[in-house]
Length: 151
Image (cartoon, rainbow, N blue to C red; front, side, top):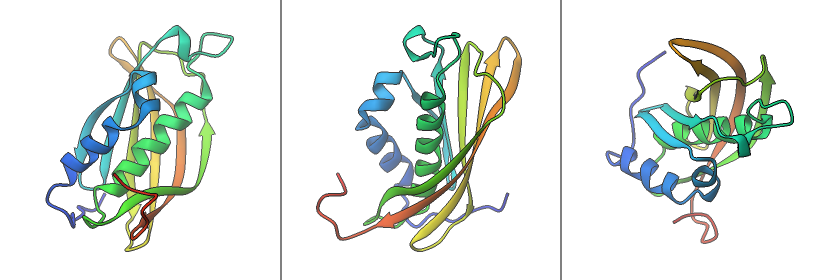
């Protein structure tokens, strides 16, 4: 992966501040892990209330956390006056989401002034093992000048 240059020296704090405002991440018990230019990890522990009928982490939870990981990865590279919104994503569910914890990785593949493309990967962690359970392609947009989008 190419090293990316951030446009805002306070990108990490902006990501943390924005993440703290996401009610759904709080509800799911999600926590930020790695935050670096073009890179964000989100971690979630297994919880019964996040499962589907077979006890696997629900696909909606996996896709929600991957979307946020990709969104924040893109956000790390945006200008200080920009906010981020997802405009499209596709998820591939590769294996049942069975694990003690889950790591959702968002990685910028192609940054742009307005449109950024990211790849997400979700891993189930159990003991010392990790298993790839989902991938995501995510397209995000930098939003500026809108009073209804922003903190």
